[in-house]
Image (cartoon, one colour):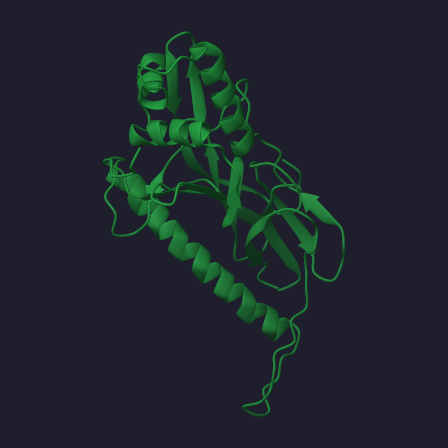
Amino acid sequence: MSGDGPIGRVVRFGVFEVDLAQRELRRSGLRIRLQEQPFQLLAALLERPGEMVTREELRSKLWPGDTFVDFDHSLNAAIKRLRDALGESAETPIFVETIPRRGYRFIGQIATLPGLTSTHPRRWKRFFTTKIGMLSGLAGGALVMLSLYYGRSVTSHESQATVIPIVTSVGEKTTPSLSPDGQHLAYAWNGGTGSQFSIYVKLVGTDESLRLTKQASIDFNPVWSPDGRYIAFARIVKGGTGFYVIPAFRRH
């Protein structure tokens, strides 16, 4: 597969990014080792997001007609390797859905990088393009607020800001957001492993974090209400994306 299909050459879904030209799968910017056949399988599903790709279609793409192979076993093995890389299972799919005895369907919401074409509905492209901009703004805003919180002072052109870590736990963390009073930090974390992210909140200067969401989903981009009592966030689940609001200090 050349990657010149109807979707863009670089495709994002959740915390993942697929570079069809370089034949790479990345999670939060880090490359994930994925064998050739599972990658071809993912690329074939991404060509037609939301549509079923039959087992026979996948056979013709992955194994030419003159190739002798135990097709059922090889396809099942490739699907399992792909799911392992995406951190999901057949029982609780987030991105790849099994159509029993018929084929597979990509059910995640995808977005191509700006300037590339996509077969996905325009509203989702606009949503993710806007979301990427919001995340960049949040990250920049968080750095500014942290500087103010810790009393950064600039006395000359040679002054250096002191960087103080707030969350140092293992795993992938993203979209930090300080509360209006600067006392608490909300962020998305995968718990140390896997592709599912939950919303956490912690008091700045302490080690313990409170997990606010516990769904089998990708929760990200927490935003505080002006009074600091509630947190709004985005959630990606099977079948779509939504916005939710939860109390800031209560498990949900």
